[in-house]
Each structure stands twice: as structure tokens, then as C-alpha cells.
Length: 249
Figure (cartoon, rainbow, N blue to C red):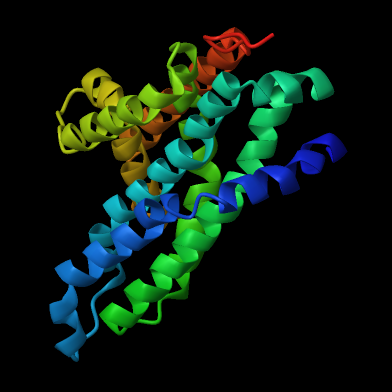
């Protein structure tokens, strides 16, 4: 555990140095939420918890998913292609050390981003909903790891630094484009849940309904996709080639 936290500080500093990424991670969704729901500022009646959760589920998905890609997957690609990952691997002798250390850093930012977003939601909706704070943080802790591991499949593509942001932008666009697709078939619905945006949204809604009002089919679908994510992630990290495309020796 000590070796994981020994990398935490330098990775945290490196993440903080890229302030522009936080515009996409938190400033953009907050701005969009305020613009879309500004009319609520003049309302005197409070919204129900169900209405609020329904309205913020995709914002939650956006914040977590974009943070996963911008704060972890993209840096891992950059680290590999710049030779920094090779240096860290020489020190730690483990691929998982950098992955887990980066995950700790990512959790730090996701938890803070969701806290800030939820405070804005409560101000706009005139609703002091402490359960929303707890449920979004719990959902983030439970759902982020599977999404991170599932997204690690991108590490197996030999992508240059200058192409990485384009590939990830396309991945984001595709994920949001098909997020609203649904069916009444268990297998097809489970396959649609492989979309991280839909997985996060459904997972957040499910956790917010605990301990009652949960569909068994939804739980089974989430469990099925979580297992697939774990398998994809473990396989992807095992295959992750630490050598950059242009090996600098």
C-alpha cells in the first residue's frame, strides 16, 4: 500500500497542472445544468428526490466518465508515449502500481467534483438533499472502478499522443449518442449497458432507490456488465505494452 501512495503526490501534482481539463470535467456540466434549469431559481415549490435524481443522472455519468478518460486513461497513454510510464515501471516493477495509484488520484477529483455539482443542484432546486450527496459519492465509489477497467481497453490501441485526444473524443461522442437506446430483451439490454454512460446512469438510479424499489432484472444486468468490465480491464492491463510507439531507449 505504501508504494501506491508514494506515487499519489507526484501524480496528483501532474493532474493539477492541467487546469484546462477541469473545464470539461466540472465547469461545463455545472454551466449546462444552470442554463437548462435556471427557471427553477424562481420557483418556490421543492422538487421530489425522484425528479432531481432523474434530472441529474446523466450529469453524474458525464462527470465520472469524462474524469475517467481525462484524468486516467489519457494520462496513461501520454505516460507511455513520453517514456514516463517506462521509468515508473522500472521503479515499481508492476503495471498495477501506476493504475491503482492513478485511481486514488482520480477518486479524489471525482468525489470533489460531485460534491461541488451537488451543492449547485441543491441551490438551484432549493432542496437540501443530503441523501443525494451520499448516494452520488457511494455510486462513484462502486461504479468508477468497473468503468476504469472497462475503459482500459483503450490502452491496447497503439495511439500516439497527438491522436489520443481525438480517439477519446470520438469514444465520448459515441457513448453519448447511443446512451438512450433501450429494449425489452435482457441480453440486448445488458449489451447496451456496456456503454459506460448508460451503465453509470442506470447504476446511479439503482443505488438511489436502495433498499426498495429495485428491479431484479436491472441488478442482474448491472452485475453481468460489471463482471465483463472486470474481465476486460484485467485482460487489458495484462496486455498493456509499456513501450512507446517511438522507443526512446
